[in-house]
Each structure stands twice: as structure tokens, then as C-alpha cells.
Length: 221
Image 1 (tube, rainbow, N blue to C red):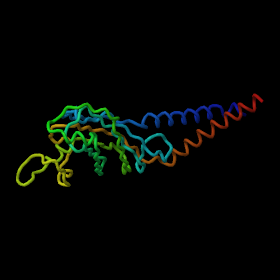
Image 2 (cartoon, rainbow, N blue to C red):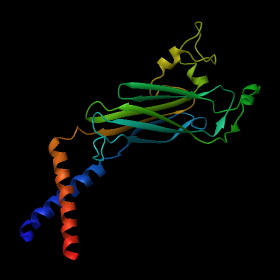
Image 3 (cartoon, rainbow, N blue to C red):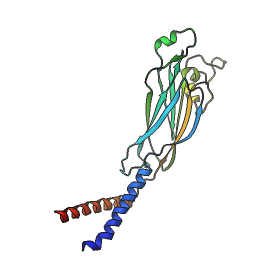
Image 4 (tube, rainbow, N blue to C red):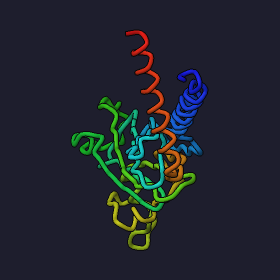
């Protein structure tokens, strides 16, 4: 009797294996689309990665799940500026952050200094709920406050006054012209929410695997 069901068992195991392999292949494909470099000795995007909350347990990012986009910031030199700034665009959301790379002593220098930066790289993470299936664009841009504060005009004059306002942050777009920093564009693939049949197939495959293992154990006992 068991021999009659062996082809079915093998087919079920094969289907479950194929579904698992397909899910793993689509799990974390972060594709680099574009990169714009300015003066990256002052700020650069060393790496980017993402993870996601796999609520469907299928190994791939699906619509409705939360992804976390992580940017690693690096720099070689620092001078007389107050802070560095990061802006991230994910889908229809915009995120901003700022941090002090240099020490307070650097702000007391009278001349612009090319001092080596020996602090660890900085990591920043931003969460976003994937709303629909298809390609999802992720953008990251970094610059210092000297560039940021010069994005809009002050008192009828164009240039940097060292003070970044809300208008400056709003004017900051991907690839905007400036002296320092870097811009990078990535893309991830969001899959549709799995149909109930997919879950049923997985459950059948797992059940068949367990049944096969149990039968083998019974035969060898």
C-alpha cells in the first residue's frame, strides 16, 4: 500500500522544496540603482542593507510587511562644521537624522582643517511598511550642515550661514548639487500577499515530510 503513495509523497516533498527555494531566492534582493558622489572624504555611504518582518514565514518581503532599511555612514576627514545630516526616502515616506561626527574642539579652529576621523562608522535604521507589490525605491543622501544651510537663500544672499532651517531640509532632494557627501538609490522587490493555496501547499509538503520521516522510523525500529 505504501508503494502506491510513494510518487505522491515525492511530488509533495518536491513541491515544498521548490516553494522554499523560490522564497529564499526572493528574500533579500537589495539592488543598487544609482550613485552620485560629491566629495566623499567628508561623508559617504559605506553600505546599505535591509531586513524585514517575515510575518508570512515564506522567506520573502510581501505587501503589508515591515522592512528596516539600514545605512552605514563613513568619513575620512572632518573640519569646522557642527554636524552631518542624513535624509532617506522610502516609498512615500521621508526620514531625516543628524549627528555630531567631530568633537567640539574642531569647531574652535580658525582655519579649515583636514583632520582624520577615527571614530567608528555610524549606523542608522528606518522602518517602513510595504503597502503594495512591485519595486520599492529607497534613497539615501548625506551632507554636512555647511552644505545643508546653503540650500536656500538668507537675507537675499545665497550661500551658507551655518544654520540649517526647516526650509533647508525641505529643499534637500536626491542628487541636489553640493560640495560634500553622497547619494545612493536602491530598490527592493515586494511580492503580493501569498494566496491561501500557497499556505496549503506548504502545509501539505511539511506534513508529507513528517509522515515520510515517521514511516522510515517505524520501518527501522
